Length: 272
Length: 300
Image 1 (cartoon, each protein chain N blue to C red):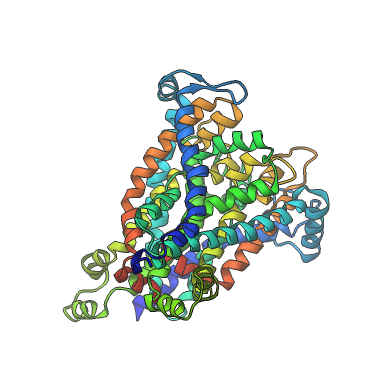
Image 2: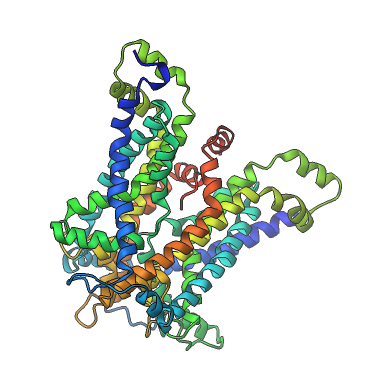
């Protein structure tokens, strides 16, 4: 009994400690620049100031454009990656591609290289082809980076589907493409969702790639948020920067809270 | 007619082709090209000039790189101690408790935040005269005027703590998955035999948690080797490049100092270390694809 109380107490104290940075973020995003003296960082703010800061983020900082751009990347690239990944898994497991594991392993090894190992050629190539700082260029790159992990999860998922499903569909006269799109994809919704959520979060939170491969029009929220910090003098006040940090965190936090179970599954698969 | 097992080779390639082609063209060729660039002098504009191993010689005699190497080592060790240790503690303490998932929420919230957002928040907390200093002054603690982000290795250590704030929830979840898969009977038997608390943990639970530990440790090492976002957001590797990690060094050498060859050499060094560390858990990760492993994952 006492050990139970100790466990609750330790967890509770640690939990409160863990929430303090969140409290500081909320409290100071809810202060007007006038109230923000820099000496009273622990006091609470108010909703009116928070609202004004939110309006300021969208009207006075360059970050507003980034929200749309990030959303496009975080939705489209994971969808492309997950479908291509499912194709790879389907070819190896269901269609029994010759030397399938070797080819699959070749794709899978794409998860092993740090991005630093590939980003210089990507930078040069995108500059030469006009893909630098374009939405299309970024979607292509994000899709490719997300592909190996998608292929990995989808292959593992297809292993669990009985071969008789495929054989029965063939007997019924369905084409291979039809079997893939009408039977296998719908059967794999849960795996597709896991991959989509993990990759959408990764794309939304990406900093390294977007810092290097974009400049203005195609720049998503994370490098824009980072830039808000370093603007001195004429830049937005600290309260507005913190509000921006709060706003860019809401989509992934919401996605995470609503899909926690899927996250846990994805974690068990070994990424992040 | 084709035989049954070979009947779909052409279709199989239609499905496999795009994925393989994209990965070969957009990942493997750039990897090889980066290797080549590491042997050249290249400023990003002119033609790369072959210089042999010169960049590697420069790299290993560059104090910034050696500092960066040391910092990265501190990151790896620090990330093993704090997020893995506290993650295990949270998992173990909360496992089997009523409202356990409620008590885990504070640790999970930071997980959804980006490295950049965390950098912004912790800059606010750790700047000179920031929230931490004010709290310390309020409680009359010594060190309230510490310059957290300006002195090495203190700045690296506080950034590791900022990163731990985010990472603990994930590690706790992974350990919980592991705890759930431990069979109940041997634990009960040990309990009846009088083992409890620390003894039960060290002799029974810790050895049985080994698969989870391998994944958590492997992931922690690989991810800490690649540290970039938090450092770039909080200190930009400064002041005077004293808080750089390998990822940041590669970025500043290449894209800020236009020494592409040197940056490529750093990238290769980073890759070799990361790949070596990956082998630790890759086998385990691929093993999940086996029929025995996949069932466990589905239950979790």
